[in-house]
Structures are given as C-alpha cells and as structure tokens.
Length: 380
Image (cartoon, rainbow, N blue to C red; front, side):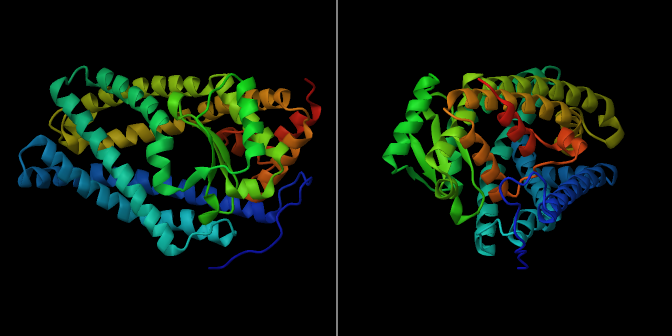
C-alpha cells in the first residue's frame, strides 16, 4: 500500500496540515459517494421493478411469509453488499492504510467485515422479521408497536454491547496499572458513577488511533482505555479524557440521546407508514406488509436521517461542550485537558479547524481548536 509519511501537525499548531486536510476530504468524498450509490441502488430496485421480482422469486420458493422474507433479505443483502464492497474497501482499508492509521492486514480486514456481516446481518434479519410480522398482524398500528420495541432494543443494546458485541471485534483485559486504576475510580466516585472495572482495550492490533470510553449502562458500565492511548498519554491526561466521558453520564446525555433517537424513531416509523400507504400501489406492492417495499422503507429512513443530521449534530456538540465543562471542573488543572486534545488530534489525524459548514453538518463534536480555546479561557 502507498503510505504517506509526511509529518502530522505538531502539538500546539492550531492549523490543519495538508495531510490532515487530504485525509478528511478524501473520507468525506468516499462517504458521500457511498450515500449516492446506496440511494441510486434503492431507486433502481424500486423503479426497475427488481424488488418486486425478488419478492416473487422468494414466494416461489416458499409461500410462508417469514421464510419468503428471509429469502428476500438474503438476496437483497447480497446485492447491496456486492455493490457497496468497493467503497467499503476504499474507506475502511485503503484510506486508513494510506495515512498510516491502520495496522490491519487485508485478511484481518476481511475477517472483521465477515464478523460485522454476521452480527449486523443477524440483528437485521431479526428486526425485519419482527417489523413485517407487526405489519401483517396490525397493518394500521404497526408503526407504534415497532417504535416502542425498537426504543427498548436501543436501551438493551447500550447495556449489552460492552459484554456481547465489542468483545467479538476487540480484546480487553483488566488494566494492570493499579495507580491509574485507583486514580480513575476516585474520579468516578466523585461523579457518583459506579463502574464495573477499568479495562485496557487492545486497539493497536488494528489501529494507531487512540480512544477511551465509558461504556455500558448499569451493571455493564465500564471504563475502557485503548493501549495506544495508554502508551502516549500521561496519567493526568488519561484522567482528563475520562473526566470528559464522565461528564456525559453526570449530565445524563446517554438518556437524552436515547430520547432523541426514540422521538426520531417514532417520527420515522409514522412517516414510513404514511409513505407506504401512499406509494405502495404505484410500485405494485400488495399492501403495507409486502416486504418488496423494503427499498422504499430504506429510502425514507435515509432521507429522514440526512435531514436530521445537522440538528442532531448541533445538539451533540452542545452536550460535548457540557462534558468538557464538567471535565475542566473535575480535574486539578486545565493543562492535561489541553495536552490530551493536542495528542488526540495528532494521533487520530483530527481536523483542528474544519470549515464552519463542514463542522455544522458533519461533526458531532466541536472542533479541536474550539475545545482547546474553551479550555484556555475556562475558569472554574
């Protein structure tokens, strides 16, 4: 692979290097191209009648609705995976290797893709079977029942992901640095937040990026610190990073986001319900429970997500500022917060000063430079 070796921005430099700009510009181009290709594929499936043909083929092999749906979903998934594979490779493997951020071999990347397909495919199949079962049973009120069920599923996954999903893709072990463990646990006690342990996250096997998180809900909440972060950060900088994550829990941001996601889910399902009622006859669908309408359902979901993206990101940036404020009040000095931001920007090739419109539309966090300037001016 072609690996760029130009030096990244040095800590303290408040401008993005050409390398950083190229990395993010290429990533956005690939991401937008992915949306366009997915959107175009869904339109072709609808307007060329391919989705109806797939439904007819599925029903030919089995008249049972649940089994016919399973056959349709396998065919539909195979088409979307084949069409999306080139961009997935460029975005997830080629780009990360070109800029020296990935440690995965091609075989390792393929293995992760297969794992993701197995996990995501299984959850997607179960969700679709439930969705269309509700449509068949309650064609007028399915959207209410599904919205409530999906909201419950979001909460369940937030609880189970640290113990069921993430270990499929990454290795974790209890952090051996007892002094740092006690320092972080003391921080959680001051925040009245109970955790089930502090774990080292073996991220270096796959990436050179650094990250940390406070994952899970209730009995699965735990601190995870990437080994790449532990290798580069001083203890007080790790504490500053965790203090920010604790800020989200103190301000109950997770529940706020679940509430926002729940409201968007209800609105989305209602909009899908009305759209299916309106457009089903035009595409030859046999009522709302005809699973040939899946591309139309996906189109409505995609359009709604894109329309809500700037508003959701704006709200997210406000929560991130709250978490930064909490962190700066929780630690003894603002300097570790500032140096941790500098190091994260360098290790992750983060944009320090993205264009305002780019930040408004795409960024869920304030820019690194804004966060540093906020910390420099902060007074508890």
